Length: 386
Image 1 (cartoon, one colour):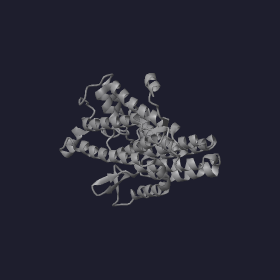
Image 2 (cartoon, rainbow, N blue to C red):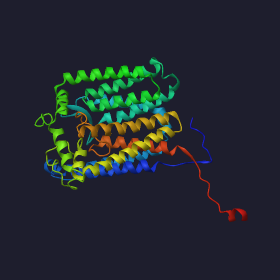
Image 3 (tube, one colour):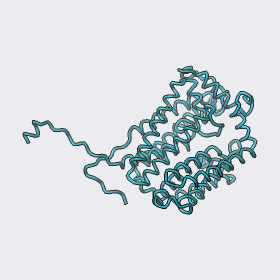
C-alpha cells in the first residue's frame, strides 16, 4: 500500500539527474555522427545514416523515459513475473532461425520487420525489477540460504547463461556483478556470495580457456603492442587514438582513428574517438556527467519511500554505472575487450531506449520522495499588522 501523503510535504523531480542524462544523450548523438559519417558514406552513401537512426532511437527512448516517469514505480510490483517471463522468451527467440539475427557469429538480435532489437538490454531491466521486488519482500529472511540466496541465483543464473550463450560475455558478466552487489546490499551472507563468485569466476575461466577467441582477447589485453596486427589491433588503435588526443584533443571532426583504423568506432569504442578529438578534458566532462548521475541515483536509493524503491533505484544505478565503467576500462586497456557499449553515447537503439527507460523510473522514484515544504518568510511588520 502506498504511504499516505503528508500535507506538509512536497514532491520534486530530480532535475539534476534528468539534465545529466539528457546531456550524455546529446553528446552521444553528436559523437555518433562524428565517429560514423566516414564509414556511413562509404557503406551506405549517406554520411547521416547512423545519425538518423540513432536520432530515431533517441526519440523512442525519450518517449519511454517520459512514460516510465509518469508510472508510479510501485505498480511494477504487480507485473514483475510477467515481465520476467516475457524477457526470458525473447532471450530464447534469438536462437530461433528466421527470428533471431546473427551478426559476426553472435545471435543477440531479434528482427521485427524493419526494427532490430537486442533482448538482453531489456532483460537487464527485468532482472533488476525482479531483484528489487524479491529483496524487498524477503528483507527479514535474506540470511537463509534457501530463501535469500538460492532462488535469486537460480532465476538470474538462467538469464546470465542465456546471454552468455549468444554469446555476449561482457553483458553476462556485468549482470552477474549487478546481482552480486544487490544480494550483498540486500543482506545475503558474504560466505554465500563469495562461494558463488569463485564458482562463476572458475566457470568463466574455463570458458575463456576453451574458446580461442576469448583467450586471444586476454593475450591482446596483456600485450596489445605485441599482438597489434591481429587480435590486439582494436585495443592498439584505441590507445593510439587516446594518446594522440592529449590534453585538449585534435579538435571536433579531426579524428584519424575513425578513418577505418579503429573498428566499431561509433559503438563500443566511441570514447576513444571522443578522447582523440576533445582530449583528456573532454573525457573528464563525460566522467563528471556519469558521476553526477550515479551520485543522484545512490541518493535516491537512500531516500526512497520504501524498500522496493530503494532496491530498484540501486539496481538501475548499478545497471548504468557498471556498464559505463567496464566500457571505459576496455577502451583504455584496463579490461579485456568485451563488446560492451557505453550507455547514452554508443550507437545502438536497444541500449539507448532501455537506459532512458531506466532514467524515467529513477525520476519517478525521486518524485515520490516527500520533502518538507518551506514556509514563506513573513516580514515582522506585515505579521504585526495581521
